[in-house]
Structure formats: C-alpha cells, structure tokens
Image (cartoon, rainbow over all chains, first blue to last red; front, side, top):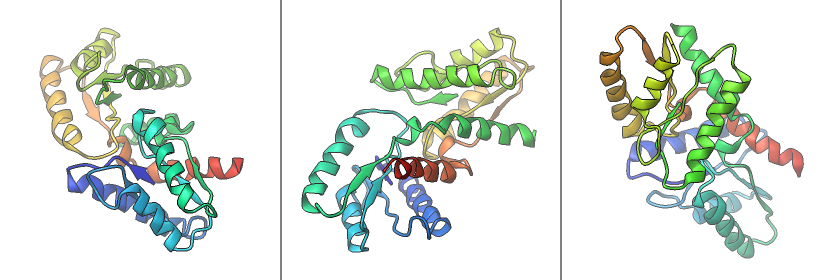
Length: 120
Length: 120
C-alpha cells in the first residue's frame, strides 16, 4: 500500500493504521502488509518493498492509495517498480488500479452517504 | 462531493466524471449531484452548494473526497458549511466522513487487490 506522505504526522499514522487493519483482518489472505510513502514520511516505497521481501514475500502487489491518476500514479509508481524489480527479479511485483480508479469506488461513495442519511 | 482540485485538468475531470456516474446510476436516490473544488479548479465548493440549491435541493449532504483527515477536512469543510448555512438556513447541510475514513474503505482496498490477483 503506497501513498504520498504528509507533513502532518497524524495523516501518515492513518495510513499505517489502515495497513495494520488489513493485516489483522485479512491475515490468511494477505499475511505481509507494509505501507510505503513516496516522500516526506517513512518508510519510503523502496524500503517498504524491501520489508516485504525481508518478510519472505514470494510476490508483491502494490496498491497506489491515491484518488487521482496523477504523475505519482502514472509515472512514479511504474518507475519504482521497474527499479526495484531489477534488484529482486525472483519476486514478481504487480500493481493494482489507484484506489480512486477502482470500479468499486462509486459503491463506497454511495455507502458513505447512506451512512449519514441513516443516522439523520 | 467536494475535493481539493488539481493543476492537472485530467484529475479534476475524473472527479466530475465520478459525480456524473453517481447521478446516472443513483438518480432515484440522489437526483442532484455536484462536484466542488476547494481551490485551483471550478466550480469551487460554495458555488457547487449554490448549484444544488438552484436545482431545488431541500437538503444537502457534503462528501469530502479526501483520503486523510487533514486541515481541509477538519477545518476548511466545516467553515464552508457554516458560512453557506447562514445564507441558506432552510436547506440543512450535513457532512459525511471523509472517504478515507469510511468504515468500508478497508473492503475497497481488499477488493482492489483481489481484482488484480484474479487476473493473474
């Protein structure tokens, strides 16, 4: 799970917490989860990929936690993958859609609004 | 649906497209949808709220399309609501969780990863 990184520590903590939550609730399906930041915060993306490999991951899926298909998604992420893949040719690295481009995002938006309407 | 706004036109277009998609697919449930931007892009948030009211909305739900609970979510959004609510006291405005704070976000993350794993 990779994202931008913020000067605001609490925002970075939210990302780490979300990664931990996936690890806790989906341990059988995805036993090794690490969050990586593009800039400002640590661990940075190459380091988080290295952590997965140190934890004996045999394949890695990168999930770009970005809302838009900006430069970080279309340029920086593939560049990170290519660079890292050279160092670890035996661990295939694939990448998902950025989260904002997920086909299910529309359902999350509707559910989020419904949650408020239910409380009203 | 409110978000930051980007210098990259395509990113802003993605937000408008998502709002249109909600309007098309959930017309009965939410007949009036407008996207509003905090800065850089148009329409800006107060204008998008005004558009809802011009379209005869009787209540408004604001959905902050942000991943983190940063300043834009915890300070700017309530300030916009308070300011706008003064001008339109008869149209109640409520606000949802920011999208990154939705309880369902974890499921979207898992589904997004599963989609890639299914293709492999």
